[in-house]
Length: 329
Length: 293
Image (cartoon, rainbow over all chains, first blue to last red; front, side, top):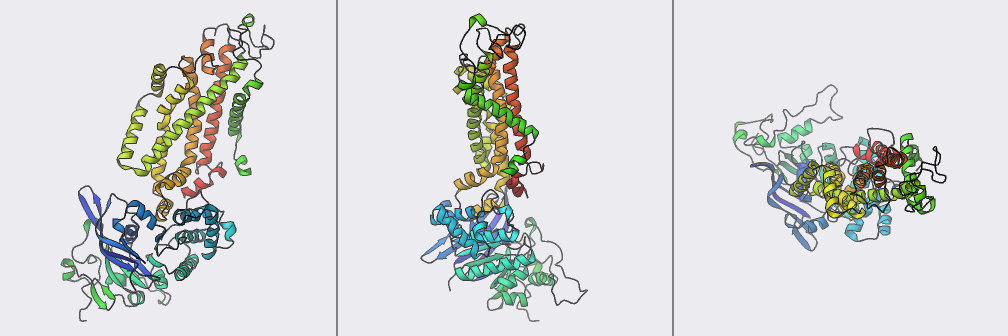
């Protein structure tokens, strides 16, 4: 199957005066119809920046795209998003690519009812009349599992709970049946029980619409639940990629291993301590030489300090940027 | 609506009451004023109020040098004050809010240009601008409104700019952009509506201010032309006779004061009810509270 969205060698840096700090370095990823790509990493590793680059919402200045292309391949047309005009991009946003944000408390406009906010997107992209758009809004709210949508459609964001609002956000995002949905930490701000419900809604919508999902999270549990493939990012680079089950069960990069080891698990013996990754993420101003993770890596070797390993194949379809990969044990 | 009424405290009620009385006077002037405001009765000139010693029967607040009824002139004067105030505030509010929105949303050199202009305008005393403009263009209600619009828009621009800067970083604005809402709709449907509350407070306080300044300019002969009865003009006419006819200055002065106080009380109440930190009138400000989280 061909990719719907292909990000190739994307480079983004932050420019402060004459200094420029690379924030995304050579990011490539592709999204396929009906599949979910999970992107994990600590705060500041460039996950959200990747999403904003695809949406062309980078705060610019200071952000600057230094290279690469983002190709959106819909049936009958294939376009590099980086070359679109503002108006063309606006037609892509919401109709072809939609996005859900982390905090449902702040991502709805407090002065409009839920229905009006869903209707706005439909009116903008599908040219529906207000009355038709509101009717569609009711149906959309029903499909995302909001009970008595006829009443909810007239309510304002402050009258809804966090889970409800996130469902409403999903309804807005999926109103125009976009080919691609980007979800930036969609469940981080929610209760655990609500998280599961929201994920279930996202998955059922994905199945019925065939949407490709780019799921950004730092929650390995969400990845295990949702993702087909995983990208692990560290300091603006991809350090490991592969099928979700394989990366989670046999992580090859010490960073991925660290992320997984720092999670509590139910079958962990009582009294055992969690293992955190040592240190903190270095700043973009002081990116370590060689392998970027060597300052925090428990298996650091001499070569790591000087030379960048590049992506090395672990098995077919699973690669990691680590000198340990492929070495005879 | 019930909660809206419940949030009105005594002060706000007084404010609304005063403004309502003035507004009714302005609207109903031809029907409620006992005399034609320009009708002269020279036999009865400078007559004290009807209830004062030697008062002229039928002239509740006395008459002026030309025998014109003071009460009728005050009632008609409310038209000038309110008309000038609303026209000026609507004009300066529209200009100022638009420039503030543009500066806040687009930033960069556009914002630098507009905000430096604001700084310059704020450095020039407002009354100076008004005096010079009115002297050059001649006294008329239209020129008065233009003078206010040219000089007072900065008040709205400052506030709008600050609010837009804060609002622009909110996630729901990003969410609007990601769903392909146009810049125009984001600016006017989302940002403008969200900052309307605080701007309304500014507008209400400006109404009071404009009435004061209009009276001041009329007093200097630079406001409305003398044939139109206005409160400031009445003060000017009464000034010469202040030793013998106290009613000529007292009552127009009271009218100005009570109207301004009324607008300021309403403005204070609105500011409190839009401010989520002061939990008095939550009803009006539920949306503000929600957005402050």
